[in-house]
Length: 161
Image (tube, rainbow, N blue to C red; front, side, top):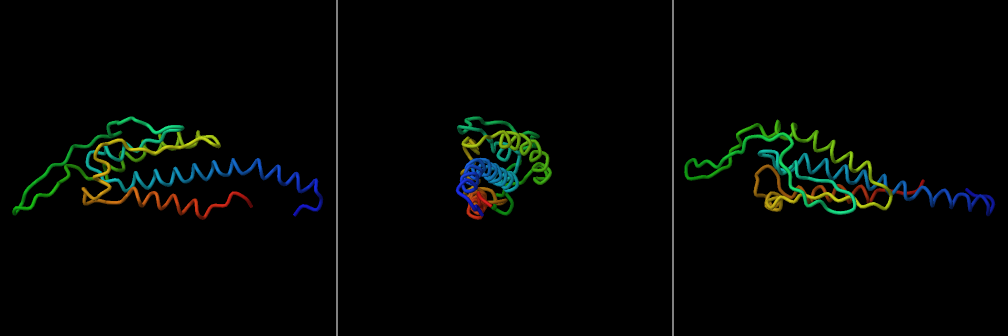
């Protein structure tokens, strides 16, 4: 606690300097958390959807990319008049093969962000909304889940001691 006006002024200057740094650390932590959750909950077939969570600074990416480690596409099969999607590969193995390069690329971008700089996390695949709406039996509402995780981090955060 400041005992003199000079000490109070010094404390205020230190606080003014620390808040942008702490806000940037929080922003980076929220971005890492949301990205990690999306990579681990986005439905997987070939690995394309999860590989297309793209982190960009200052503006949203318009990029669409292939899977980092592509897998064979599944197919629709019919049995007893019921059509179901079958995967040609182990979906968890496909996820694990793609999650490391995706995380590495995203975290490099996130860590390079500066105070006041926006971090954008986008997926430009035309079918990502359908996946989030439950088109896949693996997961639905994974985007909402990731947003809630980020909101929880922000709501619990403090920028001062």
